[in-house]
Image 1 (spheres, rainbow, N blue to C red):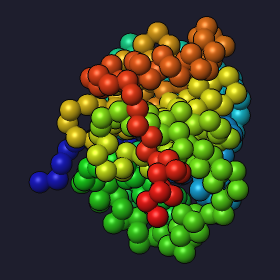
Image 2: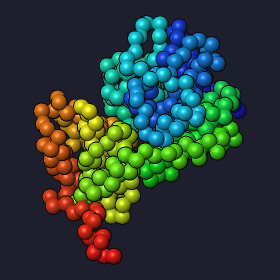
Image 3: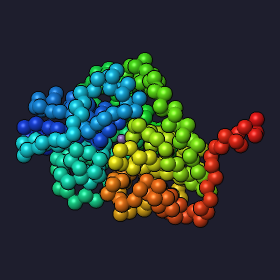
Image 4: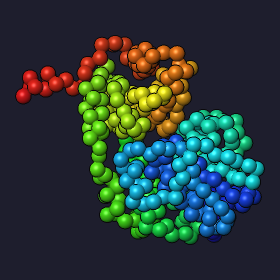
Length: 348
Ligand SMILES: [Mn+2]
């Protein structure tokens, strides 16, 4: 007997049909998962409801792979600083939590719908449609499911975007893909362009990227099984998370904290593996009364507004290091450098 359970995509479309138009909102500095998910929803909404829909987020997009993604696939993304809403406009928040501050609704306005896979804090909002599945690796897998439910085939570009989104979200997760992720990947692979995918995965990198990587590596300190790195210079906000993904792969490390200042913001990324500590919980402790955090259990991010925190960057880094080591139950305060030039040369 066929299931009578209403399809999620039908419920979403039913909610949005009450409005004149829809704005799909991505998190700030949208990543491929946010862009691909938003793009699929935009396609779904415009084809099924035949009403105006836009895909908005705050920029800029700076990571080389993400710029290449935009250049080659041309997702219908509009980068804006703010959004004007009226009662006839529905909002769909994708790939981030309603209560988090890293999107155009700033955690103050309840969206009409949310489609996400992050761990979500209680937000107290009345939201007519919620589809939040933290066990799913990529929000893009959920968006692909909606398209499949509605018998819509993605264009080559959209399918490539969704596949790339799932592949990037797999980095550093240390867990098997959910059944939905696997199913979506298999379905999408029939439409995706793998030549373009490889061009997105291997973009030309600017020279400053290597400089920042070198400065970062020289600043990694190891305390027992915990690593801390404050990057002396970053030009793209995404580098903090990228560096954390690299560091958590180091033999013997179970949790890492990376941070760096960009303008007024001090950006943080935490990673963990194993059952003892979860990055999300550790970072939450570190940022108490200092800033905001969110993300996945083992991959979390956060932000502090430097002028508002009452400390200069040196004091802030010292405080963050203390709090991080306390949260990790590490008693030593003597860090060992991950790499030192002198030691490497001596071993030659
Ligand atoms: Mn995501």
